Image (tube, rainbow, N blue to C red; front, side):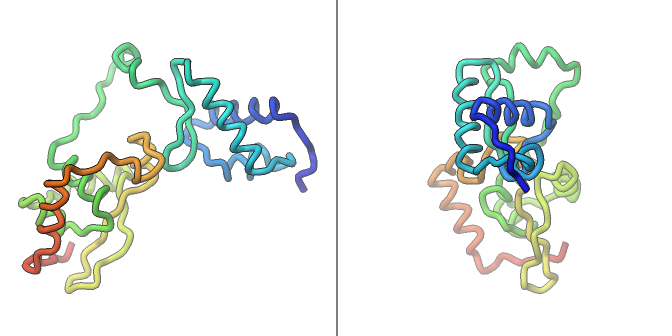
Length: 196
């Protein structure tokens, strides 16, 4: 039973250190159930501590940011030109086809491969879907109730984490013309679903 009490300053230190050493994003719930499990700490106090940490780092080279699976420290984007020199490897370059497929899944999830092909106008290579699944940016969330029962794809918290998004509502809005065209293509009754 959580009975130990700590000051707000100690709480900030514990949460800051826990997020710093975790190596992956940490949710408030996970903090409460692990490093704070033996302490008498309410969610409002945890929220307040996180806000204090975010405020402290506003003028620094790193920030505490909320992403899909919790909180993490990350360098400010403005420092990328200098920090990129730390790594010999270059970030992987993704094909336009992969990025278009990922975008359609992100904006229209859940969506089938056939629907993606209908919008893009070309076949989606199995390598693209395989890459997205291996990176854990997308997952199969079910099967559409049509002949062949094609897989329905949706993004994951790993997708949100990689692109530094707290939720899908942070995706930039699609231009109105593109949104309209996608809606038109997806509502076309001639769209045939093919089995995966």
